[in-house]
Every structure is written in structure tokens, then in C-alpha cells.
Image (cartoon, rainbow, N blue to C red; front, side):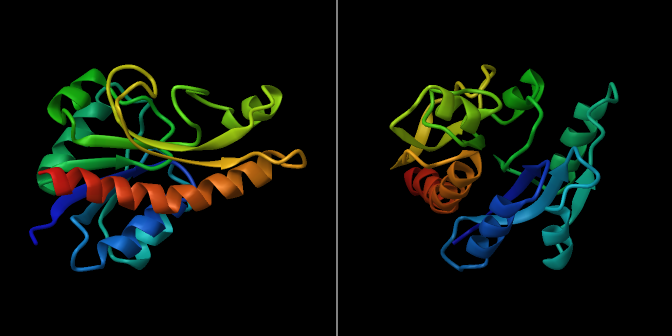
Length: 187
């Protein structure tokens, strides 16, 4: 199997990155993580890139030409697929055009509900019965691309934001790899 050179974009703890690295080490998993990009110099997830000897770069998204730096590095590492794993920055139209249907994101809600930030507090405030995660293609609308996979759980009366986050992460660790396999099984 020819593995696709993939870049994972992160901003924080990198638990989804860690999970994808573990999956990518299996011979039949369709991606090879060739690059990690973070917009947060202090992102804990960078430690996983270091541990597994994956090249990583920090991109200061406050600079005007940051997008050019991203594109140059994607070309340098021959990246053909991108996973957003807790990347807390909206992807530019130019990057989306260059990687049409080749950028996916994982979001901690059952889209189209609760796009954007503060998902767990909003779920509790709205007294939702179900919560979960969605893996979707990235387009120019925030959390608006077509869905690849959704997984859900029922919200209990005593669930708080931390419990919702933990339950959601457990689903994400299954959903993200399944979505990647589903995408490349089609191709």
C-alpha cells in the first residue's frame, strides 16, 4: 500500500495527533504522518512529533505571509493530505483551493449543531440529549464541509463540560482513523 504523505495541524495537547501516529504505524493504514504544523509554540502535541521523529514547524499565524510558509512546507514534504486535529485557526481560501477535498477536520459536536468554539458549554446550556463528534471535509464555511463520519453518545444529567470532553475524545480516537480509512477506500 502506498501511504499518502500527510500533515497534521495542531494547536494544543495533540491527543488526536498521538492517536493518528499510532494508527499510521500499521502497514495497512493509508497515511504516513510526514509533517506536523502548529500555530502554538507551546503546544504539548509537538512532543509527540519529537518523540516519533516527525518533522514539525511552528507557524506564526499573526504574520502576513504565514500562509506562504505553510504552502512551501507542504510542498517541501510532498504533502497530499491534511488533518486538522484541534487546530484553532480558520484555514485560508487559498489553502483550501490548493488542497480541495484533501483537508479534513474533527469537530467535537454533531454538526451542523454547535459549530465553532465553546461546544461543551453550549451542549449543556441547550440541554442536548446527544453529543459526539464529526469528521468532515474543510471548506470555506466554518465547520461547514460535508460529513464523513459522526459518532454520538447520550448525555447524562450529571455530565459536566469535562465529562463531555472526555467522552467526546474517546469517540474522536475511533472516528478520525475510521474516516481516513473510509476516504482512501473510495480512491
